[in-house]
Image (cartoon, rainbow over all chains, first blue to last red; front, side, top):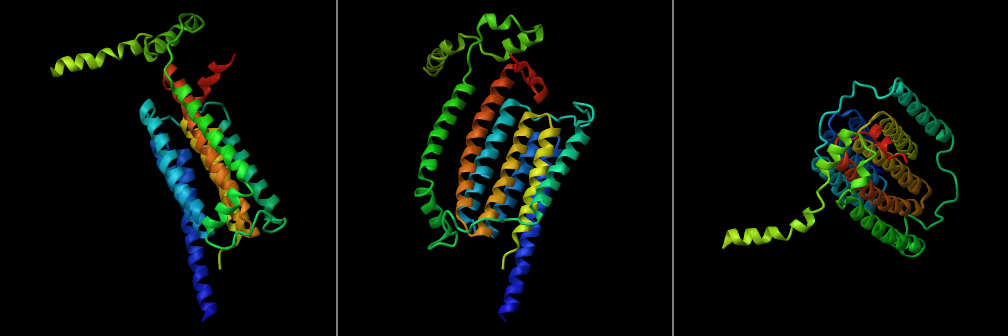
Length: 222
Length: 101
């Protein structure tokens, strides 16, 4: 009876692994062969969901939830925002090769990397002491165990991530801020660079022009 | 019983290789970024697998930090892409040679 249950559970595990592994690999291949960046982003979602299922299958419940929320929910949406915002969702011509022989070289290098990863690890997949940072089985659920180790052993690292996030936010705001181009910066550029820069960069007066707009709309309303 | 860890590690290696090949092959900066995400996910998967094989919660804690760093990296990277594309629309990775000093 127990053996039958184990066998059944094992079959379910194998089925879950095969299905999610297929989703992961198909999604990953889809990311790199899609000609449209939007399709790449959607294929990335498939891969991320597959990885989340694999996390669940390995008892990492918290990380599976965070994977779906942060990766599929936030990061991919950010990607799609940028794709749509920049209007770069045009079809890329994959037939034209940027560099002669780059594609075969890349594929060969990828296969070499795969062979190294598989064969060097093949003999002993995981060596080392068990449960150094704390047992993953620990008392309580997976969330409790992870929280306990995050707030004790990895407390300083956890605090540093908050600093990292603040720096990232400040950096993103600074990078995305539209700054008027100084005139002498345009000297070194070629003619079409100059026109594209002038077309895309806002004139320096646009910010001062903003407060006038509510006044005109107010007039229109009155 | 759960499946042996070597299956997951082989899948992670395959995922990492696909991401690396994509990073080398594609010229669209956004797709290259997605390939970096693929590689990060492969590493996350192997960390979780090691965590299960060794019965150690530390692997999952590291994945948590990788997630945070990946989020920060994506935010800053997309900011750079927006800044570059605003100045020069349709920029591919090859066009970024204009960034040299």
